[in-house]
Image (cartoon, rainbow, N blue to C red):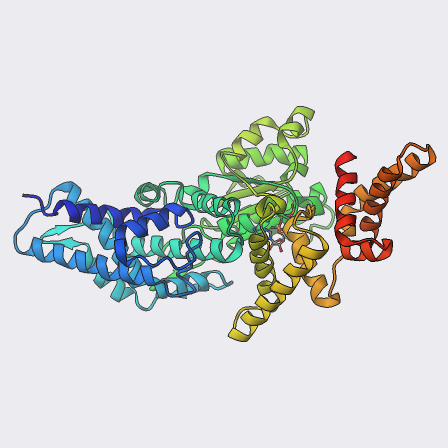
Length: 516
Ligand SMILES: Nc1ncnc2c1ncn2[C@@H]1O[C@H](COP(=O)(O)OP(=O)(O)OP(=O)(O)O)[C@@H](O)[C@H]1O
């Protein structure tokens, strides 16, 4: 006779899937719905659950049900019922689910503390966690998940809480594209199979470099930071703490802002006297990065050919030397790079090494352009504006939150009536943040800077066409509307200057642009 009834097996499978599902995918909500049946509360954050910030009614019920199910099965096993191997495994996953949710708040507090530049983060409740792990991972006289010990499990569960926080709090948006982006970041940290990650990959993901591509201002550095700050940090039982080595978790280097010599010295370090200005020995990013840290190379497409060779060697062998030294050193962390260049074209041109490209892009994330995130959806625009205003005004108190919401509503209305929902946002999220700041200070925003090049060439083309007498009166008015809009920055202002109504100006300017 099996330990589990068919219904209990289904329930256990559901809790296992819930424990290991990517929390940013809509599947998670479906699983919750399946596990809770009639008790499921559709509470509006379906695509972006936020258990670290708001109490979630579904999670509470799930915890109560899973704990009750585990207790029932343990009582049955204590009464002499035996479980087969697959039942033991399912009960083990059920126990992990219960443990995660019982300690969730305390683990989230640890996760947030690890984000600060600190030497150690204590978990004084570890003894309690260890006791409960011992209790929960037991079924009769069998030990569930025998390969799992309390410190390893705690490190994994805290890492899950960290990654959730880092991704959810940093990456805004509710659109499909935003949801996909968050889910992909999660995969870069845990792969698509968290169960396998738990079994064998916890300290292996540093071997997988990630390449983030996408237009400027779309959050490539943000993505890199979310990955970099979510690595596996082991728990030190003797100190009852997560002990961080001296060094940083996330070490970014903006290649385009430094000369090749400086890039090399920042990355690899140097010996005193190795070059003019090397006044003392210095450890570079690769040396300073701990095993759970990340070196981030921004604008990888601009990296010098000689450094490409050295970088390839680091990726293949993890070995490098400081400039001016022969002593081999090891890079232990993870590498994340970003570029908005087309690396395939750079390879064609011979400016980027093909072997380095293949070594660097095993895991690739593409950040979407802001206009694709919004795609005419006023709700999504307002949500993203809200994200930006919260960052600016703060969200620590109810007053700040209300203020941020009010500002967001005002800015969204202003954007809709002045720029229109189809504003192309060439500067992406960075431009949106700029727009919010500008509105806050001046009550208006002129998107002219980002569009300057385009506007200038449109203006020159108009002048040429007028001189050549090539335009009909209608075409002339279309192009003139577009030019005044480029100059003034809003349809409202252009309409006032032209003595026309806003809709006419917008329609004509758009027609001029499509006929360009
Ligand atoms: N999806 C997003 N959610 C929230 N904020 C975002 C998002 N994308 C970008 N931002 C914000 O926009 C600004 C620019 O982001 P970031 O520097 O990461 O872009 P980038 O793609 O690395 O740009 P560049 O290619 O110019 O270096 C930052 O202030 C960042 O916080």
